[in-house]
Image (cartoon, rainbow, N blue to C red):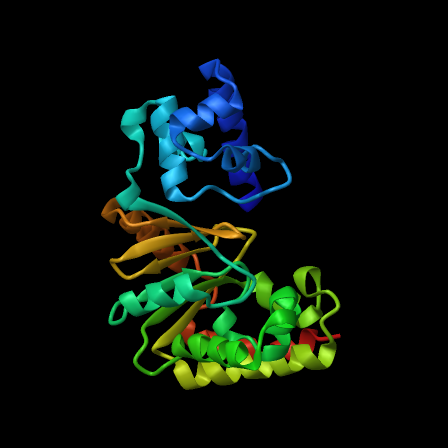
Length: 281
């Protein structure tokens, strides 16, 4: 999704620049953004999306909607745009449970957290798997940073939490077999990961509830709903943050749909996890 969103944005930015009749320097100056920022956004080598203030400045100057620039709407009219108070774009970084994500968790304390991870939730992963998936970040992290990451992840499994997770059943199976994103992750580490995941789930259920859906029947982009506070869509290098109540309700309804379509209910998940070692080759 991250590459599609960035690609759509770049193409539509090129379109409004061409339509404006201005060169890049004049367009940037008129929109109130740096020329270098505009050049980076138009580069096909950079998949990142602009920050909210830059996005809104471009939309305002081009008289188009923010939704349209991001490919969320086919309507160009500026009347459809999301105002800055309702939208943010934040950097993700090279480590799990970054500062932004942790701050959103704290703000939503006392509310239910509902998340659809890219594959598996980071807070159920062993350090070995985290190092495998976030190898670039872990290579440069200090011991203090690593300790902070683990503490942040453990917060999601605390007894006082109320967390629901929707995960594709196929993600668990691919992990066990060491395929796709986990190709090259050693079998002994996969077995340890499965045991670790099952143990945490046993200790945290029912405050932590997993629902497993079948990718043959349903697909979802990765997103998290932080209670009534915000909905956050994961775009890879960035988070797309929605603070408007209507958008939050929309993602909550989508999560409800995934729950209804789940093929493994929360009380059955541990048994499913315990059977995964049979797939480890």
